Image (cartoon, rainbow, N blue to C red; front, side):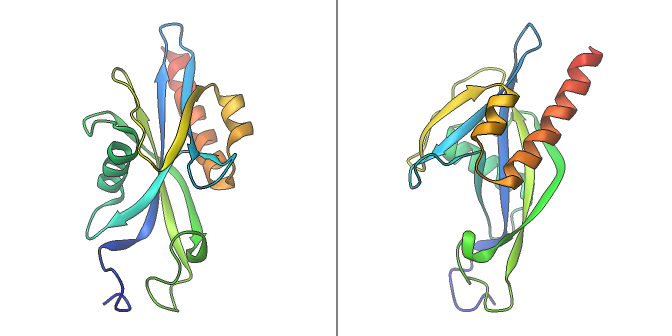
Length: 158
């Protein structure tokens, strides 16, 4: 039992970076401005629910926050962070759960448009160096570095 609180919230977070690759092999990443915090740019972030896997949670959050279809190609990253619960949703799981994992993904956008939820004030498609300067959280920069490295390696081999 989860300390008598809302049990639908699972004790993990996800982070998703949408990306697109142009015909000229340029890679662009979507970064999102939070509605509740000025100048806070990040990937799509959210919590798991019930018995979701991290991947199913990533697909749900990407759809809810940006209108990204669940059939898009997702890439699970090795990047993984532990986040203090006070930065996420407080002591929802009781006083012994102090940190929760954040699982990271990339999702390729080939067609369709990003449709923002109220959680975000806006988004921008930017190249890697700009995204790295904009992102607020170290965990976001680590995940984006890995995603960019993986994509560049693959794109360069084509």
